[in-house]
Length: 290
Ligand SMILES: Cc1cc2nc3c(=O)[nH]c(=O)nc-3n(C[C@H](O)[C@H](O)[C@H](O)COP(=O)(O)OP(=O)(O)OC[C@H]3O[C@@H](n4cnc5c(N)ncnc54)[C@H](O)[C@@H]3O)c2cc1C
Image (cartoon, rainbow, N blue to C red):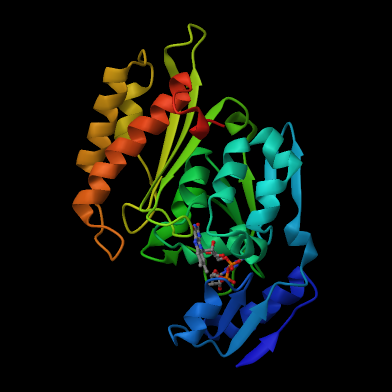
């Protein structure tokens, strides 16, 4: 296996373009090194992004919103004053990933491209209506975050593409947002992860807008559209939130694995969605509210 460390984005994209399916991107290595060690992937060329410091930028402007370079580490997101100020839910989500040493090395781009079912950032970014930029020598395309996740540990990223940036639009910043994670041990990925982004109307009880992202339950993270529909435009109450959570649980397509059965995941989805929605609505379970 050949190891290369391109010094620029252009060089990295050319290397990927030349190697096609034989090339593999290395970001923080927290997932890929394990896959290599287990022989689950065998690239001919490993393309490290370590020298691409432009991909570690975190920037905010009122028109463009929040922009995170793909090589931004989970620890940098957790501790960034900009992220904490404009999108505290994402900072909190990052703080729930594994342990500090994993977060010091693991990157947001690597997390999204690995697409582990219980990964924490995907449901949060779905609720935040984020988009991602995918660059190649052919140009740059922008995808809605949910379109990135195409199957179990599969993504829409092509072999010659690099995920370069994650964008969170201004409309998703500020306001109420909650991410709740249920896992067996604190270093584990989520058995169930629910992210809620809620806007209340002027009366303080009507749901003006809502986006819900779910992770850990199914092979891919997804948006809980039916639950959103039940609550959008309605007065929020314990009953309406319970009804929406029950529909989300009834409609999910849960997996069974060593961490939990499909039946358990379905039940926990209902519980954690109810808690996350209630936290977004009236601050109950304040620890969860960002
Ligand atoms: C002990 C442990 C516990 C963990 N617990 C959690 C948890 O609780 N929650 C959670 O969300 N995650 C968890 N993870 C996963 C962790 O977040 C990983 O760091 C992350 O999934 C991968 O990020 P990375 O930068 O290390 O990517 P790498 O391991 O370097 O790469 C992962 C994959 O993404 C591809 N890739 C990376 N960057 C790009 C890019 N910019 N463009 C295109 N392709 C790219 C690589 O080719 C590879 O296929 C855990 C990991 C470990 C080791």
